[in-house]
Amino acid sequence: MKIGILGGTFDPPHVGHLIVASQIKERMNFDQIWLMPVASHAFDKKLSSAAYRLEMTKIVAYDGIIASDYEIKLGGVSSTYHTMKYLREERPQDSFYFCMGSDLLEDFHKWNDWKALVSENNFVIYPRGRDYEHLEHKVQNVMGIDERSHISIIEGQDVVITNVSSSLVRSRLKENKSVNYFVPEKIIRYITTHQLYK
Image (cartoon, rainbow, N blue to C red; front, side, top):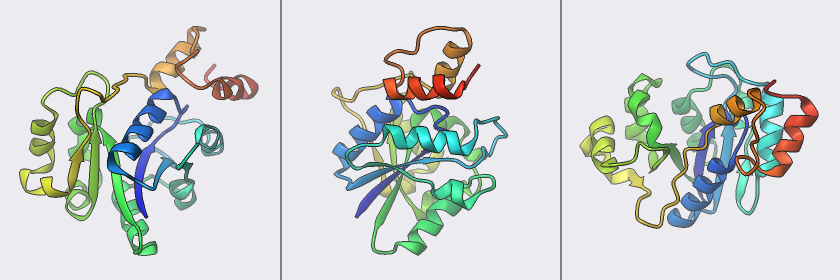
């Protein structure tokens, strides 16, 4: 199978995640996209419990877009390099692609073993927020022009781009603002039931 790995905090999952996942799956002709919440954040960001984040990710999963507890089961600080290495070793019959937003390129050099991550894995880069102009040039500058052969960029006039983020959703909730249409209705109910992001 061709499988895209879309990692993140998913704190909470929102429509932006689903828009990105569905477009990547369609464009890349993937069999599945795995939404993979981190166990804990490499840059010491405070997160909601892994159990809450995984459960919310399961709620939004649909039609080949699957919630994965892989990094949560690994535990500790999540490392994309090690996650991708383990996946390749455990499932050599499948092809894995790491999917990341253009907004992460700026700090990509801070990632653990980032050079090996690029050289050993397939990548899919999708435009995110307002940082998507000249994306081809940015990818080559950050990841190295020699690595372009196994890096796919999602681009074109028909690509739907969103700047909805988990931090934006949390901020609006703390300010008692509506998050209708930012997150699916089932997620709103879950957040309310568990009194998250107060």
